[in-house]
Length: 267
Image (cartoon, rainbow, N blue to C red):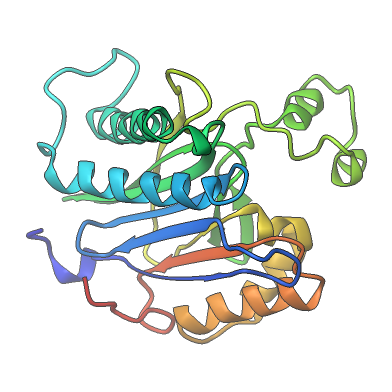
């Protein structure tokens, strides 16, 4: 990637099995060289979730690394970079489903995914975000934490229709029922959006192991107090989730460009 070094964003990620689960079915990719970061949270009996999340990560990173800069043909409503990321997720969806055909023991496996691809031009940096499921992307800007993704869950649909309150969602027995993910349906239609970035922005990708244990405001307070490196930020978030119970695998990837917080990871 030929780019002004001052434009390059760097990320760091950590994953932890938590305090309850015996297996970590989360996976993540930090590809600073591609300006691509991905988090996947697998689901499925026995080893299925672990396999699905790994396939998703490997397929998406390989697609972005080897495909043409942008697809020749795009959907009318998508920008070229959005179409590329959507196609990467669809390739991962197909790869997961093909694996289940070859290995019946993995039948029913799937994974959530959230992927961020940062691009640059003369005017600045832009983050294209594609996701399916309830793994999230947050923006931390000027001490404000904003959720840039909307969970694909049954409860989120109920919330949008005002059939349930946010307080009820947190304890509802069906709160983790997904309406979208990779490997679930023959075709996935992920949500995709492109946002303009500012130099001091911080991006946080995470699996729901973090958001099960911490409210958005609690995450914001941790980020607000943090004046250290990206690895330390990741460690603080995961340690806090585990201290509060660690009910699920927790994965976090933090991306920034501010030299006070950023470490450059090898590609």
